[in-house]
Image (cartoon, rainbow, N blue to C red; front, side, top):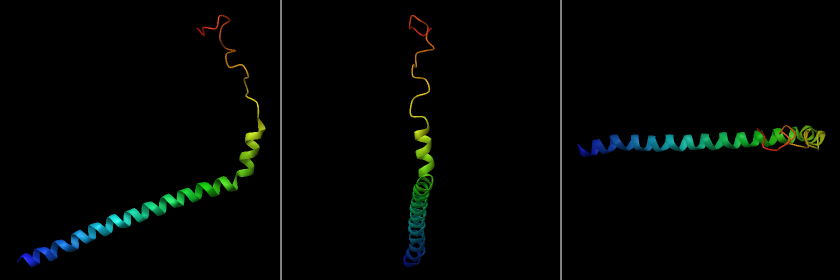
Length: 75
């Protein structure tokens, strides 16, 4: 009887391990795909990103405290 119990439990344990291994592979492939997609998008739009960064080299509001009252407490 014990040999039947051992043989019945053995496939379940190996199936559980194979499922965990397959999910790990899926997660690794998904992560690599997302990374590759992000790098590809950055490379494809590199000129556009450069133009956007150079379009406004100076800050829009050079004096960030211009909205404060003259006494400078901001209230």
